[in-house]
Length: 381
Ligand code: GLU
Image 1: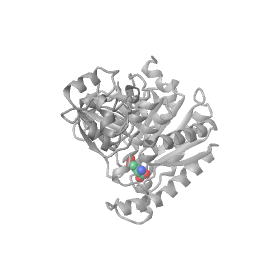
Image 2: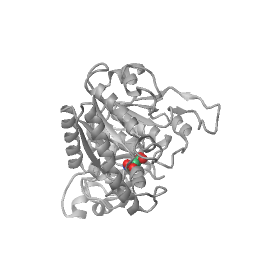
Image 3: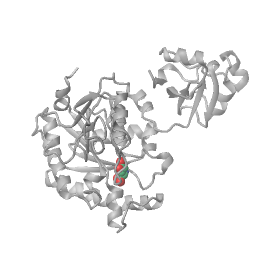
Image 4: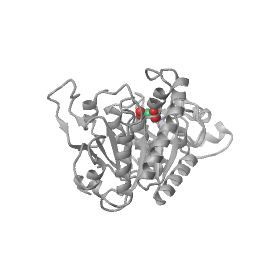
């Protein structure tokens, strides 16, 4: 395994996420100087001026904050249609600014606006992946944001820390760098606890980090430290480590790429999931779930076993064959997720039944498993 200080130095494909308050200068308007700085550094990374040539993807927030300002509103609106209008207005400014600044530094850029649905549908997911990989191959820097204009609460990713992690997993990047308005993670909120300790390095997914991060957020963007910690855990699923660093730290990206320790490094020690299993893990919303009895839960937790209908006690939600569903224990905790072999209506008929009865119940004979082990990933080990 790569030693932690070398992770960024060795990283070939890097996703850089910048938050709204940095991009828009705390909501005052697009910060051309700051964006220019990041683009200058990205160009150096892509052109191989800081070691080997790198592939980089920018995930940038700021559409709503910038749109709010351009529309002359005093504060971020709360109505969905106004948020969507602000995002549509602000995204124009973001795209224009990134395009201009990247071109100044000899970089071609491309705008990609994604929704959760693009990532949850296997075909669209693979399309997005192949487009991104093509752009990277061409030396273009994709600039990604959530397609805020068309998403509603039920179908959105919700914050760009999470989107950054999903993109990291989508392209199997080596590292995710989250640039924010704080130096990194402290053991407690430094604004309220002056003795808070700075965390230089920790393991991504360590539950102690979530307690440290609390719920601190800003009124400008969406995520707080907690969403960054969870994003790091998510990115670790594809083997990527995460750095949380201050976006105004001079030359932060170049110094990280040279192996300097800046900010908080959250190291991925996890085994990489197979791509398809990672895709299932990255579904933020599922159409339904099945609840299993204690015996089936124990068998699934031992790993390597398929879920048979005989162990199912209830079916929640409406789903069709091929949808990703959750498998829950009697207490409601998700223990696994996988591709359903049966639609919810059929699954309800099959609860507690052995495969010998399936043909009689359904009118046709099909797979003995509700979720085959090859199509299942354990979510809590
Ligand atoms: N997509 C939102 C925007 O561009 C930002 C979400 C976030 O702050 O995480 O305004």
